[in-house]
Every structure is written in structure tokens, then in C-alpha cells.
Image: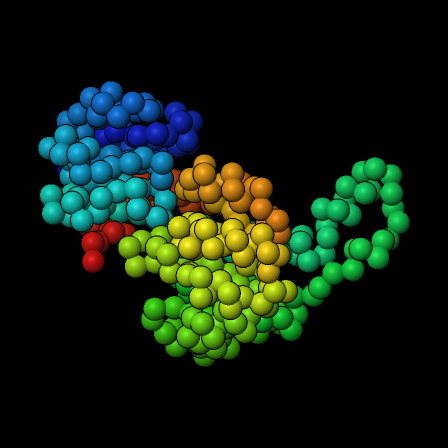
Length: 319
């Protein structure tokens, strides 16, 4: 099946390498790039599109979807699709796909890079050397990962990869997830209820996707259970937390908080976190690898090609 019109929304014109762009062009009679912040003008440009390829920053609410009567397919370039009204799209018969697992390994690797950087004072040591100070200061004395307990909240693709890496560091690994993962328990992971997991972990990894079931899941009660010496590293949306309580807890110096993925976090949350003590912030660099970009392009295009063949893969279903 060849589509009448495909719109690439919010992509830079050089996002897709030529080989992938050629594959997309082959599937349609008309291909347009749309990068327009004004919603009304954007809707006009994507008019008559049968397929949209979108970034995480592209909102597709009920009103927007209503203005696209020809739309059959939405292809997200991310794992999370909370920017799309999935229920309404489903009711209109629009297929929505995402690209699960494309960034699991680089994100998990980044988590341990951030942990080692913090625990071994790498940034401080490097800055001192740049200033000409090669002295081994007592303040460089850090902590080993070996023997520490990592508590994983959300044993999805990222959580699983983080668990595998942690086991390689000889860490004790425990997890909480809505569903037990017996295959990973057989690898040495220990399942615990959420409150028990939080109170007994030296390091907490937050790897949950934001949705209606996870929003606000980490309440005041949970945040108060975190060890004072603990490190919380999150690659998830800050809306998983009771944010006001999180800030008050950090201001009291109760634990260290490491956060990345600011593309999906409000400016208000970013600004407050930036001013908070015991917080280490990174821009959205966890997925910035050559391999990730290749997987991302391949999965986006492969999802679309399969849809045009009448085979739907990686569909996001409303539940």
C-alpha cells in the first residue's frame, strides 16, 4: 500500500540519513517536513496526511486528531507516547507505534557512568588537574559499587539492562515491578514490595514510563523511606514523584538525586531542581550514541514499512 501523504513533524531535515529517507519516500506520493510551533499553521501543513512521523515534543490531542480525517498511522520516534491521546486515536482507528528498546542499553550504561562519576569524584579530580593540581586529595576517597544494593523501580527494557550491568559489578540487585519477572529472578534479582525496596536500597534506579498508572506513584511516604546516604538516579519523568515533597526532602539533605532526560520535563521542574542541594543534573544525553541513532531510524522506518504491508508491529494499544 502506498500512502497519499506522509508528514514528518518536528524533525530536522537532516534527522534521517539519505538511505532511510529514501525508504520513506518510496512509501508515499507526497512527503513533507513540518516544523511549526503554531498549532493552527501546523494543522494546515499536515492536512490530508495519512501518516505522521512524530518526535516526543509533538502533541497530538483530541482536537488535533479531529482535524486529520485521513490519518491512519502515527509513528513515534520514542518509547514514550504520552504526548498522544492514545485512547482517542484508538477509537478513531488510527494505529500508533513506538520504538521500544532502542535506547535501553545506552541509558543503562549512562546510569552507571553517572554513578561512578559521582562516587569516585571524577569531575572534581579532572578539574583539579586542569588547574595544574596533580595532588591526590583525601576528598577523592569514594565508594565502590561492588557489594552495594541496587533497587530498580520498573523492570522494563532499561531496568533489565541496568540489572545485568549491576550484576557485573557484583552488586546485590532487587526490583519492584507491577509484574514479577521470574526469568530475571533466576538470574539473581530479588523481588520486593515497593516500600521494602525503597527502604533497603543503597542506590535507587527509577526507570518507569509516565502514564496514568505511574503518575505520582512515589509519594511522601515513599520519599521518606529513602536512606539518607542513598543515591536516587532517575531517567524518568519528574511527574512520577510528589514533586513538592521531593524538593523539600532534597532541601533537607536526605539523599542525592541524579536526573537526566530534561526534554520531557517542564521548565518549572528543571528550574527548581537546578537550585536544589544534593542534585546532579544532566541534559538528555543518555541516548546520544551513534548506535542509538541508527537503531532509532531503522525502527521508525521499519514500523512504517510494515504498516504499509498490512503488518502492524510495535503498536501502542490503549488499555
